[in-house]
Image (cartoon, rainbow, N blue to C red):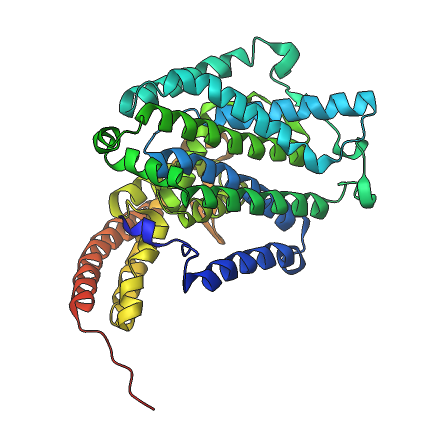
Length: 432
């Protein structure tokens, strides 16, 4: 079991029963109060997108984290679920069918499940690299078809809809964004609970067995191809639900939502958050969505930063953020966490310096190449600098190289302190 697997919800048996339901109640409460804490329109829209991406990332984790299937085309189900949802909404509005908006994500789920069955029958015949290449081919096939079958996909412009033109029970028009947020939050909670329940079933456990030792699973009588096929189909269903919610949220679906960029984004979310554990994809979806919303307003090379972040996580923290947090649990239980926190802070400071220096170099390079017609004058944060001057380049290089060297040394010290604290005896509480 990996460290990421240990950062999970309790199994719900024995003493863990209260803790399990307490975690879900706390999650539901947080979803309910968040719009009252962050009230701006941008915040509510961003939280709505986070809810969609949480479902999407968890659905991908059913493949990669639970079953060990690396797919390069998971956005196909997200996009097809969105397209079918849009067409169903337009058809219901045109025919005057009294269906509430809250039910239309089911259309996305049905589309994701149907195409998951179709594509899974082909792709799950093989595992490993062959499976990844097949999913990549399917993704390219569907993405290119989106520009050919214009009647269904709408060409480059996509297909639009109007969620306020549908049946409105209880006076919910879903015109205000906060109403859309609560719809997404409800679906996010239900979908996450369903996917978590699947991980606790015998099917979820045999998916882990196929991931860890497919030969052993086959030896005890399970068809690894059937397990992969079922996991692939169910994963497509939940991705379709996420796509349907995106269609309701944005009121438009285009070919970009089933392209390679969207498939790459969900891989980033799962790897950065942590593969395998249930909390990892949730953390990754929240973090990546927030960074996309903020960095895209700051710099036009924000995708480069995501690539660097992904490389850094794979090199220095392959178990993701959830794995890093899970590694602290033994220290917390032993009462030894205070021994390593100063070393973490010691490594954090030069790490931030190195990141600042690298960012300065990237932004000056971008200014002198992409934005060369605008001249060398630029702003880095709140500081005005000249990208042609020698001093900013010297500062950037010094921060990056010096910070990296100090970070690697501090990280080694932090690792030694962690091993020492882990080997130390458990702290005994003094009797009152």
